[in-house]
Each structure stands twice: as structure tokens, then as C-alpha cells.
Image 1 (cartoon, rainbow, N blue to C red):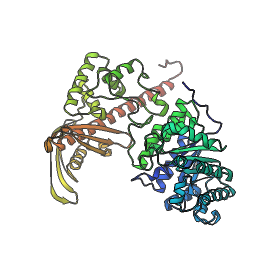
Image 2 (image 1 turned 45 degrees about the vertical axis):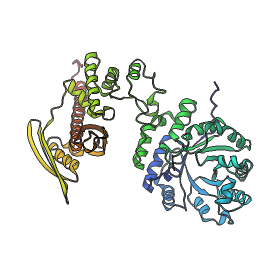
Image 3 (image 1 turned 30 degrees about the vertical axis):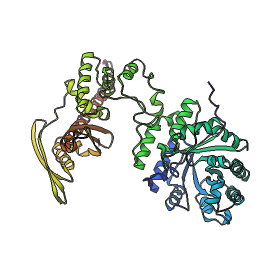
Image 4 (image 1 turned 90 degrees about the horizontal axis):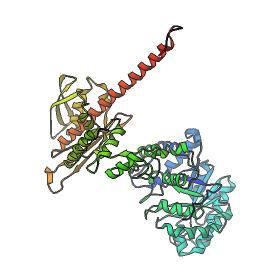
Length: 556
């Protein structure tokens, strides 16, 4: 087995979420978005944050202006402006886009240069010699302006296959002109790990520090980047959550975690790495792109266990089915409850939620109930809140804060200012019968408003609950409109988010079941948290009173 490489004296982690990542289909970042994301990237501990292309993109120009005027405070990372070599037939000194890089007032500039002979002819419509002159002139001009300069050699690997001597000459020209790092780009994302080493080694013979920039079109962006690291690059580029064009860029968090936890390198503070999951999800919230639950290290499913065999082993040793301790990246182990679950899954999940299910007979009974309900269409692996309510009922802890007596909803074609649906909800709240009618935009909204109005009389916190996601799935295809459906609802109170499930042939009935569970769980959790806070406050008062006892009295 070959040994892992030793960390070089200098190694760069370069994030391009705000530039290359922002080119993802459907993704548009405002200046405020970019400022917030940059703060999170700085918290992660990256060395460089590529903020965009000033001069070519008004939004990016505004971002750099805001950063320069003090609206962005970075504690570790350096901000990078991105641009292109000067235009064909011009000079760098006269090119307005090159000047925009200087005007961005960043300490570092990264320019992209053609290194594929075919692209020079077909895209730039110029000669190979002129392209080299464009690289040389632009780098020298930016260095003379006091900037550190990195050069991205676009399409380098494909260009090397076509004309290796020219691709290498582009690297040499950039280095001789004063580029600090020359980055080899797999722009089309077509490389494989086994192909990286020889090409990187050939470029390394020039004697300049090398970086690598990989896209994920073969699903190998991270592997290709690591292969380039093994071959000697000292600068890696990537994006958070794999944002980027087409299939995205190399995942920068995965790269950091692999190099830090597997290679043993120290790239970011351990405290920063333990924030990786939070940072990944926070950036997903800003980009409004749901995080990939199966993302390595920081995905919700990264340390989730479903099979009963896994759960039995984890009861003995949590690391038997986990390659690292999840807390190292700020994640946590999760036990999934499904028809594949065994008693060990249920016991571990119960413990995770704070319940003692060590009684084998009790755990077995709950396991059988879960399996039966999963056969009926319920999915508790996706609905922890509904599972906890089921668990509490079986443990004799059923919540009686409110009972549903009756409900109905009417909807039609007539749309009024307050909606097209009317819901009536009759409840018994803490023993008191209540009935409320509400209008809403659609039957689920009307039911939600009626239920909320009834509950907030006794539990004002219910007014803070907000439905954040609603998902419907047909379970028995082929039955047409009378098929069984599963509804999953995500609800938040602004601090936490929980998921509940409902099942039925009537989509409104399934929605109502999930909606009632959402309010039931939220109110129950609020009351339990409040009781815990009151107990803690009482203990503190007792402690303070004990400290005020007269001299000679016994303190307990």
C-alpha cells in the first residue's frame, strides 16, 4: 500500500462558490447573498474566496465595491477578483476589464487563459503566439499593479491531449510573467483519476507552483483533485455543496475533510471543520438550493443507518459502520426507522430521542407496529416527529393537549381575496370544546389556518409555526386517482424544523393527519422545553438561596 503524500509547506484552499458556483442553472445570488456566503466561507477556514468577475458582471462589481468599503470583514481568507486575459490585439493597460480587476481592490487576482490550441483558433480567433502574448502582458501588468496573480489554464487537460507542448508553454509563459500559481483546469470535467498524475507531473517540471480546478461531469471531481494533490499540486479549487455549471465543481468541504481527516494534513482549524455541516446547510439556505442529503461528511444521510444489522453492530461500537466520528465535521449519527428496522434500530432511535427502550418486549412491540404502519405507507425514516408521537403513545405518554373532534373543508372554483377554500375544525383543547372556521388559498392552507386559530387561544406558540415544505407521493401506481398517497410536511418555529407524515387515499385527509401531528409535536416539545427551563431556574434559585443561609446553618 502506497503512503499518503506529506503536506507541502504551503497549501491553498481556494473557494469559487461565489464565481464558478454561481453559474449553476437556476442560481442567482444578490450582493447581500454573496456577502453572507463569504462570511461562512471565512468561518470554514478557506484561504481564498473568489468573489466574481468585476467589470463583466454589474452584480459582482457591486459586491467588490461593498467589500472594499467595509461591508465584508474576513478574518482568515483573502478575497480574489476573477477576470480574463486582455483582448486580442489590445494591451493589458488599455483593456477596461483588466483595469476592473485592479479597481476591485483585492490583494489577489485570478485570470483565466486559453491553454487549448483548438480553443485559441476557434474561440479567440487568433494565433497561438498572440494568446501567449495575452497571457504574458496581462500577468505582468497585474503584478506591476501590486497584485498577486493566479492563472487558470482553461481546458488544460483536454488541451494537453491535443497539443501537449503548447499547453505546457502556456503554463511556462504565465510563470515567467510572474504568476504565483498556475491552475490546471479540467473545464469539461472529462478526466479520470488515473489520467491526472502524468499530466500534472509534466506541468510540474516547469518549476511553478501548480493548482487544480475540476468539474464533476464524470463524477470524479473530488477523486481527480486528490489525484492531482498526490502528483504535487499545492492549490485546490472547489465550491461548497458542489455548486457549479452542469454537474458542478469539486466539493470543497469534501476535499478539506479528506485531506484533514484521511491525509492527516492541517488545512483549517479543527474547530472550523466541526462547523462544516452547519456552514454547508447555512449556505444552502442562502442559495435556496436544498442540500444534498447524501453529500459526503455533511449530508443528513452521511451517517444515517437503516438496516437492522447495522444497528445491532452500532450498539456494540458506533464506529463499526462509520468511517469517522461524525462530530469531527459537525454532523451526527442518525438511526432510521423503517420496515427494514430491527429492534436495535428502534432502541437506538428511542435513545437518540431521549427514551429508554431497553425493555426488549416493549422495543419488539414498537418494532412490529412500525413495520405494520410502513406496510400501510407511512415512512418514519423521513418523519422523526411522527415517530416520536407514536413512541410516546406506546410508552403511555400520549399527549392530551388537544383532540380532534371533527373537521371538514370545502373548496371550489370561486376565488375570493381570502382564498378559494373554507375549513371548519372542531377540537377539544385542554378539555374545552372549540370550533373555528377559516378561509384559505387551497384546502390545506384553510385547514392550517383553522387549526392554528383554535390552538393559539391556549398555546400562543402555535402561531409561530410555519409550513416550509409539503411533499406528496403516490404509493400504489396503477390505481389512478384513488391511489394511496403519502404526505410529508416540514414545519418550523424559527429555531428547529420537524417532519410529520400522513397516509390515505384522500390527499386532504393525509395532509390533515400530517398537519395535526406537526402541531401536536410542536406544542408538546414547547411544553417539555418550558418545563425543563422552569426546573433549571428553580434549581438555580434553590442554589442561590442555599448560598444565602445564615452562618452555621447546613447547606445542601
